[in-house]
Amino acid sequence: MLDFRTMRQELAETYDLAPNPDLAEEMNDTYAKMSRVVTPPDWATAAPYVAAINRLKKEKNAVILAHNYMTPDIYHGVADFMGDSLQLAIKATEVEADIIVQGGVHFMAETSKILNPSKTVLIPDMEAGCSLANSIGAAGIAAMREKYPGAPVVTYVNTTAEEKAASDICCTSSNAAAIVRAMESDTVIMTPDQYLAQNVARQVPEKNIVWWNGSCVVHESFTAQDLRDYRKWNPETTIITHPECPTDVVDESDFSGSTSGIINYVREHKPAQALLVTECSMASNISDELPEVDFVGPCNMCPFMKKITLEKILWSLHAGGEEVHVDEAVADKARVAVQRMIDLSRDLGI
Ligand code: 13P
Ligand code: SF4
Image 1 (tube, rainbow, N blue to C red):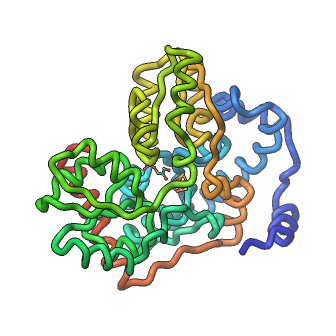
Image 2 (image 1 turned 120 degrees about the vertical axis):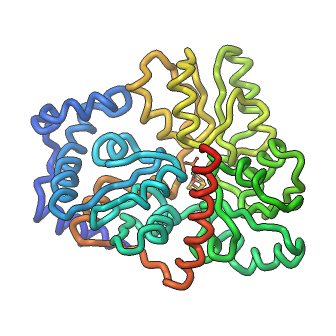
C-alpha cells in the first residue's frame, strides 16, 4: 500500500513540483492536445510532473504504455504508446527499454510481464484492479470445464495470470467474436464477462456459447432506457457502446467496439454529437483532436483506472515501485493463452 506522506515528502524534496505557469507555457504543444478539457491552472499544476516524468523516463530507459482510459494529462503528456488491451499486449512484446510503466490496471501490467519477462514492469498503484479480474479464479474455470467437457475456454484478458494460465486462449473486446468463431468446438466457454459473452453470442450464432457471470462495474451501470432517453432528446446523437455493456444497451447503439475501435469510429465518422457509452476519459482524450464533435453523456469513471495518476507515475519511476511479479510456471502457461490470441488475431488480420 502506498504511503502518501512519505511519497509526497520525498517527491517534494527531489523535484520542483510547484504549479509553474511558465513551464506550462513552454509545454504548450502538449497542452494543445487537451486544452478543451484541462484548464490552464490545472495544466500549470500538471506540467512540472509531466516534465519530471519525461526526464526520468530517459534517465532510466523506461517507457509508459497507457490504456485509452488514462486521463488526458497522462495520455497526452507522458505516454509513449496508447491503445486498447490488444494493442498494449502486442506493444509489450516489442518493448526494448529496460522498464515498462503500465498506465492502466494490474491485469495489463501482468500481461506485459508475461509477454516480456526480462523487463521490469511497474504499476504505479497495486490497487488498480478490475471488477472482472479474479471474479472466476482458476477453480471456477476448472468447474466450467467439468460442466462442459471438451469445450475450449476463451478467457478475456481482464483476468489474473492464474486465470489465463487455466485457459486455452485469451481474447479482448477487439477480437472476441473472431476468436470464438475460430474455435473448432460447437460449444465454447467464455469467461469471465457475461456481457461480452452474450454480445459475442449474438455475433456468432453458430456456436453454443456458455459464460461465467462476471461483469464490469463501469459498463453494467448504463441502461437501455438511458440510451433511449438520449435518443429522444436528440435523435441525431451517435451512440457508441463498449461490448462490456449489457446486450440491450448495445442494441440501442449505432456501433459497438473496443476502446480503440470506438476512437477510430469517431475519427472516421466525425458525428456532430456523440455519446460514448464507456469510461469518461475516452471522450476527453480525443476532444481536442475532434473539435467538430460534441461529446455528451455522463462521466462514468473506472475507479481502478483512476488510481493511476501523474503523481504515482512519478513516484513509481523515482522509487522503482510497485514491481509486478508473476510466478514463472504460471507465466509460462498464461503466455501460451495470450500468445495464441496474438498469433490468431494477426492471422485473422485484426
Ligand atoms: P479494451 O480492450 O476495449 O481497451 O477494454 C479494456 C477495458 O478494460 C474496458 O473496460
Ligand atoms: Fe475493469 Fe471495467 Fe475498469 Fe475496464 S472499466 S478496467 S473492465 S472495471
